[in-house]
Length: 266
Ligand SMILES: [Ca+2]
Ligand SMILES: [Ca+2]
Ligand SMILES: [Ca+2]
Ligand SMILES: [Ca+2]
Image (cartoon, rainbow, N blue to C red; front, top):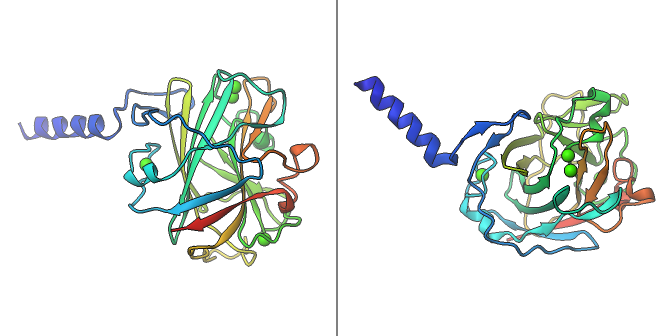
């Protein structure tokens, strides 16, 4: 009797939490927890965005039902940095951004007709998609960051890793910096992400780096992108939050000069 009660409670909690239905082959969770009632999307060519302070706690579970997300506008993620502009069944993307003292929060919604696990073709091909790329430059200094940490280009993988190059020019997982949970509803994929912001003092050999405490009116170098791989072992499209991103629109992983920005406001 007691066991039955526990089982009923467990089933109820799953239904009320996220209406989970099945686990996709790519390991995201099929859910119905992200109603598309708000279709307005603001595209900003300069890539200069504004983020409001989160008014409530955000649970990183791939669901946008934390009430504070309703306070954030949808921004477009549809500038074609590489490839021909895809049709809306192949790819379409938008995102929201919020912050608190400890994290920058992103909610990314992407329609992608064929989701590939990022590391399918081996770790060295991590940049070929599918993945969400978050470009961050804590002090907006700009400049080279290819093999240093004065700025980051986190390739957030379907497997939940945050991948960038380290100072030894190796590929490294910075998984402590980025917490991501993905869900999906059909071909619509949701990436809910919390990111710690580190400044240029970050030392990959020190296990005790302290993230920056975020405050109102701080401005951070920022761009967002999606690398769309539909099974051809290549990034067929590279879609960004800003109209241009340097030489061939592919300078972001090297040069923070090309990033847009986020202004943190209350
Ligand atoms: Ca959530
Ligand atoms: Ca696609
Ligand atoms: Ca910097
Ligand atoms: Ca894809």
